[in-house]
Length: 387
Image (tube, rainbow, N blue to C red; front, side):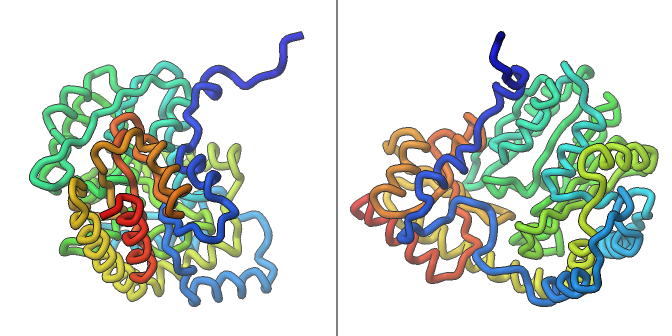
Protein backbone atom coordinates (compact mmCIF):
# COMPACT_ATOMS: atom_id res chain seq x y z
CA UNK A 1 0.00 0.00 0.00
CA UNK A 2 1.25 3.48 -0.83
CA UNK A 3 2.60 5.46 2.12
CA UNK A 4 0.16 8.10 3.40
CA UNK A 5 1.32 11.58 2.43
CA UNK A 6 -0.12 15.07 2.30
CA UNK A 7 -1.65 16.38 -0.92
CA UNK A 8 0.77 17.77 -3.46
CA UNK A 9 -0.05 21.43 -2.73
CA UNK A 10 1.08 20.93 0.86
CA UNK A 11 4.22 19.07 -0.14
CA UNK A 12 5.08 21.93 -2.50
CA UNK A 13 4.96 24.59 0.23
CA UNK A 14 8.22 26.33 1.07
CA UNK A 15 9.53 25.52 4.50
CA UNK A 16 10.25 28.56 6.67
CA UNK A 17 13.83 29.58 5.99
CA UNK A 18 13.66 31.90 8.99
CA UNK A 19 12.95 28.85 11.11
CA UNK A 20 15.73 26.93 9.36
CA UNK A 21 18.25 29.61 10.32
CA UNK A 22 16.88 29.89 13.85
CA UNK A 23 17.15 26.12 14.29
CA UNK A 24 20.80 26.31 13.24
CA UNK A 25 21.50 28.64 16.16
CA UNK A 26 19.12 27.14 18.67
CA UNK A 27 20.66 26.20 21.98
CA UNK A 28 23.69 28.47 21.62
CA UNK A 29 23.83 30.97 24.45
CA UNK A 30 26.21 33.26 22.54
CA UNK A 31 23.76 34.01 19.72
CA UNK A 32 22.44 37.52 19.21
CA UNK A 33 19.11 36.86 17.48
CA UNK A 34 17.56 39.41 15.12
CA UNK A 35 15.86 36.84 12.89
CA UNK A 36 12.21 36.98 13.98
CA UNK A 37 9.88 39.97 13.86
CA UNK A 38 9.25 40.87 17.46
CA UNK A 39 10.43 43.26 20.13
CA UNK A 40 12.97 42.04 22.66
CA UNK A 41 10.81 43.54 25.43
CA UNK A 42 7.72 41.85 26.92
CA UNK A 43 4.09 42.86 26.54
CA UNK A 44 3.25 45.97 28.63
CA UNK A 45 2.17 45.39 32.21
CA UNK A 46 -1.34 46.82 31.82
CA UNK A 47 -2.16 44.25 29.12
CA UNK A 48 -0.73 41.36 31.12
CA UNK A 49 -2.61 42.43 34.26
CA UNK A 50 -5.95 42.65 32.46
CA UNK A 51 -5.42 39.19 31.00
CA UNK A 52 -4.30 37.64 34.29
CA UNK A 53 -7.31 39.13 36.07
CA UNK A 54 -9.68 37.71 33.46
CA UNK A 55 -8.05 34.31 33.70
CA UNK A 56 -8.34 34.25 37.49
CA UNK A 57 -11.98 35.33 37.20
CA UNK A 58 -12.57 32.12 35.27
CA UNK A 59 -13.05 33.56 31.78
CA UNK A 60 -12.10 30.28 30.15
CA UNK A 61 -15.24 29.46 28.16
CA UNK A 62 -16.20 29.74 24.52
CA UNK A 63 -17.12 33.19 23.22
CA UNK A 64 -18.87 34.45 20.09
CA UNK A 65 -17.31 33.30 16.81
CA UNK A 66 -16.71 36.92 15.80
CA UNK A 67 -15.32 37.95 19.20
CA UNK A 68 -16.75 39.36 22.40
CA UNK A 69 -19.12 42.28 21.82
CA UNK A 70 -17.17 44.54 24.19
CA UNK A 71 -13.92 43.87 22.33
CA UNK A 72 -15.57 44.52 18.98
CA UNK A 73 -17.00 47.75 20.39
CA UNK A 74 -13.53 48.73 21.61
CA UNK A 75 -12.10 47.89 18.19
CA UNK A 76 -14.84 49.93 16.51
CA UNK A 77 -13.96 52.97 18.62
CA UNK A 78 -10.22 52.50 17.99
CA UNK A 79 -10.57 52.17 14.21
CA UNK A 80 -13.11 54.98 13.94
CA UNK A 81 -10.75 57.38 15.67
CA UNK A 82 -7.65 56.16 13.82
CA UNK A 83 -9.16 56.38 10.34
CA UNK A 84 -11.61 59.25 10.93
CA UNK A 85 -14.69 57.34 9.76
CA UNK A 86 -17.15 55.01 11.51
CA UNK A 87 -16.71 51.25 11.63
CA UNK A 88 -19.72 49.29 12.83
CA UNK A 89 -19.61 45.95 14.63
CA UNK A 90 -21.12 44.36 11.52
CA UNK A 91 -17.76 44.97 9.80
CA UNK A 92 -15.50 43.45 12.47
CA UNK A 93 -14.25 39.99 13.40
CA UNK A 94 -11.75 38.99 16.08
CA UNK A 95 -9.34 36.25 15.01
CA UNK A 96 -6.75 34.00 16.58
CA UNK A 97 -3.77 36.01 15.24
CA UNK A 98 -3.10 38.10 12.16
CA UNK A 99 -1.98 35.10 10.13
CA UNK A 100 -5.25 33.40 11.06
CA UNK A 101 -7.05 36.46 9.66
CA UNK A 102 -5.13 36.09 6.38
CA UNK A 103 -6.02 32.40 6.20
CA UNK A 104 -9.70 33.09 6.93
CA UNK A 105 -9.80 35.80 4.26
CA UNK A 106 -8.24 33.46 1.70
CA UNK A 107 -10.57 30.60 2.63
CA UNK A 108 -13.54 32.90 2.22
CA UNK A 109 -12.76 34.25 -1.26
CA UNK A 110 -10.06 32.15 -3.00
CA UNK A 111 -10.91 28.93 -4.83
CA UNK A 112 -8.65 26.30 -6.44
CA UNK A 113 -7.20 27.60 -9.69
CA UNK A 114 -7.90 31.27 -8.92
CA UNK A 115 -5.22 33.75 -9.93
CA UNK A 116 -3.82 35.71 -6.97
CA UNK A 117 -1.34 38.61 -7.17
CA UNK A 118 1.07 39.48 -4.36
CA UNK A 119 3.64 42.27 -4.08
CA UNK A 120 7.07 40.88 -3.13
CA UNK A 121 9.45 40.34 -1.40
CA UNK A 122 6.99 39.61 1.35
CA UNK A 123 6.48 37.59 4.51
CA UNK A 124 6.21 33.99 3.21
CA UNK A 125 2.82 33.28 4.79
CA UNK A 126 1.18 35.81 2.46
CA UNK A 127 2.33 33.82 -0.58
CA UNK A 128 1.93 30.30 0.80
CA UNK A 129 -1.61 30.67 2.21
CA UNK A 130 -3.23 30.98 -1.26
CA UNK A 131 -1.10 28.09 -2.44
CA UNK A 132 -2.51 25.91 0.34
CA UNK A 133 -5.89 26.59 -1.29
CA UNK A 134 -4.52 25.59 -4.74
CA UNK A 135 -4.52 29.12 -6.12
CA UNK A 136 -2.19 30.28 -8.91
CA UNK A 137 0.27 32.85 -7.60
CA UNK A 138 1.91 35.75 -9.39
CA UNK A 139 4.27 38.19 -7.69
CA UNK A 140 4.95 41.81 -8.58
CA UNK A 141 8.39 42.75 -7.32
CA UNK A 142 9.23 45.95 -5.53
CA UNK A 143 12.05 48.04 -7.00
CA UNK A 144 14.70 50.33 -5.50
CA UNK A 145 15.03 53.97 -6.39
CA UNK A 146 16.84 56.82 -4.66
CA UNK A 147 17.69 54.74 -1.60
CA UNK A 148 14.15 53.48 -0.95
CA UNK A 149 11.91 50.63 -2.01
CA UNK A 150 9.21 51.53 -4.52
CA UNK A 151 6.25 49.83 -6.19
CA UNK A 152 6.02 50.37 -9.94
CA UNK A 153 2.31 51.14 -10.17
CA UNK A 154 2.19 50.49 -13.92
CA UNK A 155 3.67 47.04 -13.35
CA UNK A 156 1.03 46.27 -10.71
CA UNK A 157 -1.78 47.54 -12.93
CA UNK A 158 -0.58 45.28 -15.73
CA UNK A 159 -0.76 42.30 -13.37
CA UNK A 160 -4.30 43.13 -12.19
CA UNK A 161 -6.17 41.61 -15.12
CA UNK A 162 -9.88 40.72 -15.36
CA UNK A 163 -9.09 37.09 -14.43
CA UNK A 164 -7.45 38.11 -11.11
CA UNK A 165 -9.38 36.93 -8.07
CA UNK A 166 -7.41 38.66 -5.30
CA UNK A 167 -4.57 41.07 -4.61
CA UNK A 168 -2.66 40.62 -1.35
CA UNK A 169 -0.83 43.80 -0.40
CA UNK A 170 1.34 44.18 2.73
CA UNK A 171 2.13 47.81 3.67
CA UNK A 172 4.23 48.75 5.56
CA UNK A 173 5.98 45.78 4.09
CA UNK A 174 7.82 42.96 5.79
CA UNK A 175 10.76 42.73 5.07
CA UNK A 176 11.56 45.95 3.17
CA UNK A 177 9.67 48.62 5.13
CA UNK A 178 8.16 49.90 1.87
CA UNK A 179 4.94 51.78 2.52
CA UNK A 180 2.24 52.40 -0.08
CA UNK A 181 2.06 56.11 -0.94
CA UNK A 182 -1.30 57.68 -0.14
CA UNK A 183 -1.75 58.81 -3.74
CA UNK A 184 -1.53 55.22 -5.07
CA UNK A 185 -4.48 53.93 -3.04
CA UNK A 186 -7.27 55.31 -5.24
CA UNK A 187 -5.73 53.91 -8.44
CA UNK A 188 -5.39 50.40 -6.98
CA UNK A 189 -8.83 50.46 -5.40
CA UNK A 190 -10.41 51.63 -8.66
CA UNK A 191 -8.79 48.77 -10.61
CA UNK A 192 -10.02 46.26 -8.05
CA UNK A 193 -13.54 47.72 -8.29
CA UNK A 194 -13.50 47.65 -12.10
CA UNK A 195 -12.49 43.99 -12.29
CA UNK A 196 -14.19 42.68 -9.13
CA UNK A 197 -10.83 41.84 -7.53
CA UNK A 198 -10.70 41.16 -3.80
CA UNK A 199 -8.15 43.45 -2.13
CA UNK A 200 -6.73 41.80 0.99
CA UNK A 201 -4.63 44.31 2.90
CA UNK A 202 -2.16 42.96 5.46
CA UNK A 203 -2.07 46.01 7.74
CA UNK A 204 -0.18 44.54 10.68
CA UNK A 205 2.49 47.29 10.66
CA UNK A 206 0.16 50.24 9.98
CA UNK A 207 0.96 51.90 13.33
CA UNK A 208 4.71 51.41 13.03
CA UNK A 209 5.67 54.19 10.62
CA UNK A 210 8.52 56.69 10.69
CA UNK A 211 6.76 59.67 9.18
CA UNK A 212 4.03 62.00 10.38
CA UNK A 213 0.55 60.78 11.23
CA UNK A 214 -0.68 58.02 13.48
CA UNK A 215 -0.71 55.28 10.85
CA UNK A 216 0.27 54.36 7.32
CA UNK A 217 -2.03 55.25 4.41
CA UNK A 218 -4.98 52.84 4.51
CA UNK A 219 -7.53 51.63 1.99
CA UNK A 220 -10.06 51.75 4.83
CA UNK A 221 -10.11 55.53 4.56
CA UNK A 222 -11.25 55.40 0.92
CA UNK A 223 -13.45 52.33 0.78
CA UNK A 224 -17.20 51.90 0.67
CA UNK A 225 -18.93 49.20 2.75
CA UNK A 226 -19.66 47.11 -0.34
CA UNK A 227 -16.08 47.17 -1.67
CA UNK A 228 -14.32 43.83 -1.94
CA UNK A 229 -11.80 44.92 0.68
CA UNK A 230 -10.61 42.89 3.66
CA UNK A 231 -8.17 44.48 6.08
CA UNK A 232 -6.33 41.98 8.27
CA UNK A 233 -4.44 43.09 11.35
CA UNK A 234 -2.86 41.91 14.56
CA UNK A 235 -2.16 42.94 18.13
CA UNK A 236 1.31 41.40 17.80
CA UNK A 237 3.49 44.28 16.66
CA UNK A 238 2.16 47.65 17.89
CA UNK A 239 1.39 46.29 21.37
CA UNK A 240 4.30 43.78 21.65
CA UNK A 241 1.86 40.84 21.80
CA UNK A 242 3.46 38.38 19.36
CA UNK A 243 2.96 35.31 21.54
CA UNK A 244 -0.66 36.09 22.32
CA UNK A 245 -2.01 35.22 18.84
CA UNK A 246 -4.75 37.83 18.57
CA UNK A 247 -5.85 39.63 15.43
CA UNK A 248 -8.83 41.10 13.64
CA UNK A 249 -10.47 41.67 10.27
CA UNK A 250 -12.40 44.60 8.81
CA UNK A 251 -14.90 43.22 6.32
CA UNK A 252 -17.73 44.13 3.97
CA UNK A 253 -20.86 43.67 6.13
CA UNK A 254 -22.24 41.17 3.61
CA UNK A 255 -19.25 38.89 4.27
CA UNK A 256 -19.15 39.03 8.08
CA UNK A 257 -21.71 36.32 8.81
CA UNK A 258 -19.92 33.92 6.46
CA UNK A 259 -16.59 34.70 8.14
CA UNK A 260 -18.18 33.76 11.48
CA UNK A 261 -18.97 30.35 10.01
CA UNK A 262 -15.43 29.97 8.66
CA UNK A 263 -14.05 30.89 12.10
CA UNK A 264 -16.27 28.23 13.67
CA UNK A 265 -14.72 25.58 11.46
CA UNK A 266 -11.16 26.80 12.08
CA UNK A 267 -10.81 27.79 15.73
CA UNK A 268 -14.41 28.36 16.96
CA UNK A 269 -13.37 31.59 18.70
CA UNK A 270 -10.48 33.47 20.23
CA UNK A 271 -9.77 32.73 23.93
CA UNK A 272 -11.96 34.79 26.24
CA UNK A 273 -9.30 35.86 28.75
CA UNK A 274 -6.89 36.91 26.01
CA UNK A 275 -9.61 39.09 24.52
CA UNK A 276 -9.56 40.99 27.85
CA UNK A 277 -5.90 41.80 27.26
CA UNK A 278 -6.68 42.91 23.70
CA UNK A 279 -9.41 45.22 24.97
CA UNK A 280 -6.98 46.79 27.45
CA UNK A 281 -4.50 47.29 24.61
CA UNK A 282 -7.07 49.18 22.54
CA UNK A 283 -8.31 51.32 25.41
CA UNK A 284 -5.01 52.19 27.07
CA UNK A 285 -2.33 51.53 24.48
CA UNK A 286 -1.80 54.84 22.67
CA UNK A 287 1.01 56.08 24.97
CA UNK A 288 2.72 52.71 24.58
CA UNK A 289 2.47 52.85 20.77
CA UNK A 290 3.96 56.36 20.76
CA UNK A 291 6.87 55.13 22.89
CA UNK A 292 7.43 52.12 20.69
CA UNK A 293 7.45 54.25 17.53
CA UNK A 294 10.07 56.54 19.06
CA UNK A 295 12.19 53.54 20.04
CA UNK A 296 11.92 52.02 16.57
CA UNK A 297 12.82 55.31 14.90
CA UNK A 298 15.98 55.55 16.99
CA UNK A 299 16.79 51.87 16.36
CA UNK A 300 16.29 52.29 12.62
CA UNK A 301 18.70 55.23 12.54
CA UNK A 302 21.25 53.35 14.63
CA UNK A 303 21.20 50.16 12.56
CA UNK A 304 21.10 51.88 9.17
CA UNK A 305 24.03 54.10 10.11
CA UNK A 306 25.98 51.06 11.25
CA UNK A 307 25.19 49.08 8.11
CA UNK A 308 25.97 51.95 5.77
CA UNK A 309 29.36 52.44 7.40
CA UNK A 310 30.37 49.02 6.03
CA UNK A 311 31.89 49.30 2.53
CA UNK A 312 29.65 47.88 -0.18
CA UNK A 313 26.52 47.49 1.91
CA UNK A 314 23.22 48.60 0.36
CA UNK A 315 20.58 49.41 2.97
CA UNK A 316 17.49 51.20 1.58
CA UNK A 317 15.51 53.39 3.97
CA UNK A 318 12.47 51.62 5.48
CA UNK A 319 9.39 53.83 5.79
CA UNK A 320 7.67 51.61 8.35
CA UNK A 321 7.86 48.30 10.20
CA UNK A 322 10.79 47.10 12.30
CA UNK A 323 13.29 45.79 9.78
CA UNK A 324 16.42 46.73 7.88
CA UNK A 325 16.63 44.82 4.60
CA UNK A 326 20.19 45.02 3.27
CA UNK A 327 22.65 43.24 1.07
CA UNK A 328 26.35 42.46 1.22
CA UNK A 329 27.65 42.04 -2.36
CA UNK A 330 29.92 39.13 -3.09
CA UNK A 331 28.88 37.04 -0.09
CA UNK A 332 27.07 34.22 -1.89
CA UNK A 333 23.51 33.07 -1.24
CA UNK A 334 21.61 34.71 1.57
CA UNK A 335 20.95 31.37 3.28
CA UNK A 336 24.63 30.41 3.23
CA UNK A 337 25.56 33.84 4.53
CA UNK A 338 22.96 33.74 7.31
CA UNK A 339 24.27 30.36 8.48
CA UNK A 340 27.89 31.51 8.25
CA UNK A 341 27.09 34.54 10.41
CA UNK A 342 25.67 32.21 13.04
CA UNK A 343 28.57 29.83 12.86
CA UNK A 344 31.40 32.38 12.78
CA UNK A 345 30.23 35.30 14.95
CA UNK A 346 26.92 34.26 16.57
CA UNK A 347 24.82 36.79 14.65
CA UNK A 348 21.28 35.67 13.81
CA UNK A 349 19.67 37.33 10.77
CA UNK A 350 16.90 36.17 8.42
CA UNK A 351 17.94 35.22 4.87
CA UNK A 352 16.36 37.24 2.08
CA UNK A 353 15.19 34.13 0.25
CA UNK A 354 12.79 33.49 3.13
CA UNK A 355 10.72 36.27 1.52
CA UNK A 356 10.78 34.81 -1.98
CA UNK A 357 13.27 34.71 -4.85
CA UNK A 358 13.02 38.52 -5.01
CA UNK A 359 14.93 38.60 -1.69
CA UNK A 360 17.94 36.55 -2.76
CA UNK A 361 21.19 38.28 -1.86
CA UNK A 362 19.56 40.24 0.99
CA UNK A 363 19.35 39.85 4.77
CA UNK A 364 16.66 41.05 7.19
CA UNK A 365 17.58 42.56 10.55
CA UNK A 366 14.77 43.06 13.08
CA UNK A 367 15.95 46.17 14.92
CA UNK A 368 13.15 46.14 17.54
CA UNK A 369 15.82 45.66 20.19
CA UNK A 370 17.60 47.62 22.90
CA UNK A 371 20.37 49.94 21.59
CA UNK A 372 23.14 47.95 23.22
CA UNK A 373 21.94 44.74 21.55
CA UNK A 374 21.81 46.35 18.10
CA UNK A 375 25.27 47.83 18.69
CA UNK A 376 26.69 44.43 19.63
CA UNK A 377 25.15 42.91 16.52
CA UNK A 378 26.70 45.55 14.30
CA UNK A 379 30.08 44.90 15.88
CA UNK A 380 29.74 41.18 15.12
CA UNK A 381 28.84 41.90 11.49
CA UNK A 382 31.95 44.06 11.12
CA UNK A 383 34.02 41.33 12.77
CA UNK A 384 32.72 38.77 10.27
CA UNK A 385 33.58 41.07 7.37
CA UNK A 386 36.94 42.09 8.91
CA UNK A 387 36.17 45.79 8.58
